[in-house]
Length: 428
Image 1 (tube, one colour):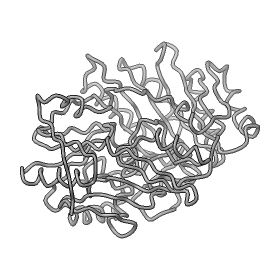
Image 2: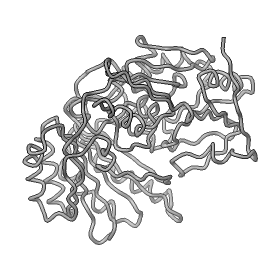
Image 3: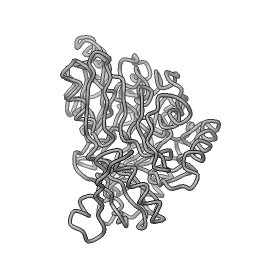
Image 4: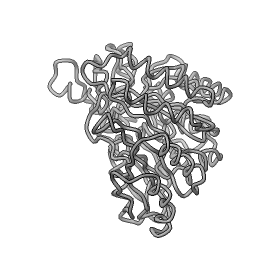
């Protein structure tokens, strides 16, 4: 038996705008109903309300994705499901679907533990995990979804489930939000308090880009790294921001990064021993709302031709960043049975800031040009980085092995045959 005191808001109601808006402001959706979920029973009530009203169901915790929510949809917000409980002996965290990684990091740190979180403490836990999750320490530990022990979710018929195995469990650890509304997860934690890392900013040149690529190719799996090529603060002097998280002794870290420091005179050098509670400073992602577009591809190799496209891509009149990530390592090994890409050694992507006056058609052309340069070396897309691209089923299909995609579709058809759910990254 369920009990719910579900609160709903409609356009014009006090609090409606605050409830519907998320971190990503590229699209300003105006759903017919916003349901404020404070419990799994509220989620059940919201889904049943949507079914009675003939509406589809979208879900938003923090709103980092760019998918448009239909004006006739019911939007469930799960931000109030933010509880975090740590079992230090079992090294497990039980986390509400609306919790953000910063809260989990802080709670786990009290026990000398850490989650496999990503670059931003403001990202919601559930959305990150159901799309796979690329952790800062992923080259050693793999995808974050591989460390999920249990998932609590409500399926499209309004039924509540706690799953630890089977088809549905396989699907939700990397297959996206097509299978139910997650209300809580249990994840494994690792014993960790500090890393060596931070950011090292160098002049962005073909030489420094290739130097980082060569260094990253041979770096140990304990070192995860990425770079951002940015036209800030001066477009005439682009910056290469090298990000590093190394699980090891600080003196070993100093020796490891010495070749990077020798590539050019650093503009900024913040490499040091960091508490894991400071891990957000490595990428220094924006804490507030943004309007942006991204496109990312997974690569088997990162040749000079792709690196050489980075600087022209950020000096084309649109405020944008090019990002390369070193993958490989544990990302390519099957730690858990889940629909996750195993053939990516690198990723390459762009982030375009959709400031007033920026034309979507211009960004489309720039993104297509960048993907075309990378195409000979591309193995597909990464599900963990799809949310910034919007609801593009073709991109979702390209993020999965054909056999995995067929299985995901079958499970989706069984879990939601009427297509009640309208996920941010829908299966084709």
